Image (cartoon, rainbow, N blue to C red; front, side, top):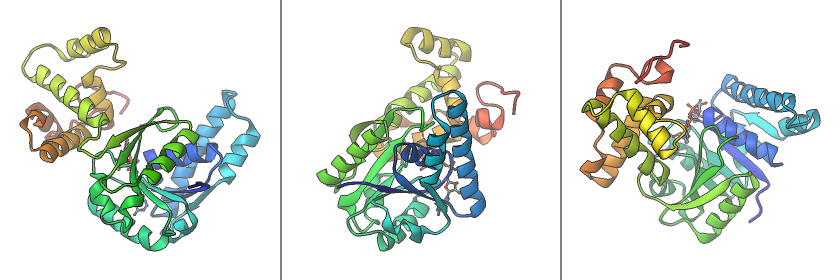
Length: 285
Ligand SMILES: NC(=O)c1ccc[n+]([C@@H]2O[C@H](COP(=O)([O-])OP(=O)(O)OC[C@H]3O[C@@H](n4cnc5c(N)ncnc54)[C@H](O)[C@@H]3O)[C@@H](O)[C@H]2O)c1
């Protein structure tokens, strides 16, 4: 199936990034959020990225103008009706996502594909509400979307080979490296990353080492660009806790139990960089 027009629902951190790489790759893109202000905020973030790319000599003014011309902002979900694929990137809330996919099924052509950028919600469960489980798939982009190469392509139980092939080909056209994954809690990225971070927090809680020492061990010994505690602060401790709970419940396995120190810090409002304090303090907030 040939994709020419892409719909993106949600113009936040991930949504605007997906719109940006899609438009830069030559696709017509419809970007939907719930208010004009939020649509404009998404367009503003895209414009700033393109402006910086021009200043760095990576893009010409003409390419910037053409990219922006391919982006059509809207508050109407009905405007997705001519899209070959719609990628959902709204907040991580199952009920909201189910509602959007139920509506999209009534709006989009029968042969179009519905995709979700969820980090944690089972693809198979959302597919059941899409009215087209064979044409439903996960497209898990990484943050920041224009920089990170990986897209986890997540097959639900009923996702067809044709849908997977189309989405893999699309991800490549967006300049990404798609990797096929089957639908299990945390997919691959968060199933491996989050228990590592959680174990780092256990090391701190048990007094195995200081926070600085834990981070340095993983940076110097394993060549990780950031230590697990610094990374937890960047991701947000509330998000880390939420993902651990998804793994814990999804597998019913105690090895995924969230560290009590992580829970305590979230209860205290120490959420990492975004709150100015996590394992480290951030004075710029
Ligand atoms: N932020 C990350 O690092 C990251 C990485 C990978 C995947 N994800 C996933 O991507 C999704 C979006 O996350 P985000 O960080 O971009 O969130 P965000 O809060 O930055 O953006 C979400 C956007 O969705 C909009 N929205 C809410 N309801 C809507 C509706 N009915 N229709 C259209 N738009 C609506 C909000 O107004 C907001 O602009 C989540 O499922 C998240 O798990 C996030």
